[in-house]
Image (cartoon, rainbow, N blue to C red; front, side, top):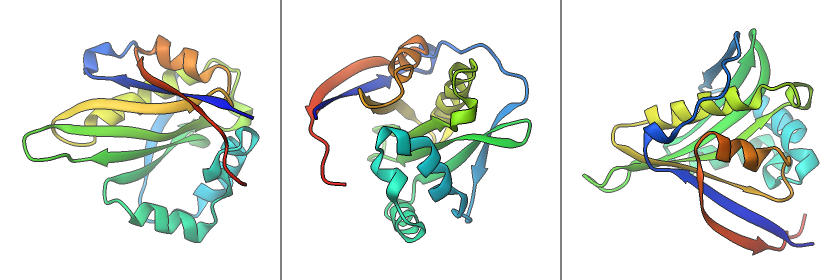
Length: 172
């Protein structure tokens, strides 16, 4: 079964169109203890067949160790975990600016369909711009296998599509 992968980007902070604010929603960094990640990712990405949803705790540790600019954040709602955001921040060559990829963005099933995604994405994008000096682009990709509200939310927040491709899912 083929799927369409869509890559979207913002190349200026001013392109962000904030979602409706949600009182009590916050983005909280996770440092050191990655133990919540496998369970959260299984619940968020499992229904969409994300490969990351099947990573073991050891595989998560190895994945984060591959890049020093890789970070993991919790989306919280009144101090309850509502979702996750993972970033790859590439410092780039000296003087060329930097890129921030949102490698994972998702809400737990009990928080979807409640009008929270626009503000959650706003928080994620704002943090993406703040991950280092000289960020010149925040980007991510999604696929036709993801939540059907994902790509429209990205476009409403100001992302523009810069590439699409057809992909055949690999072995499980």
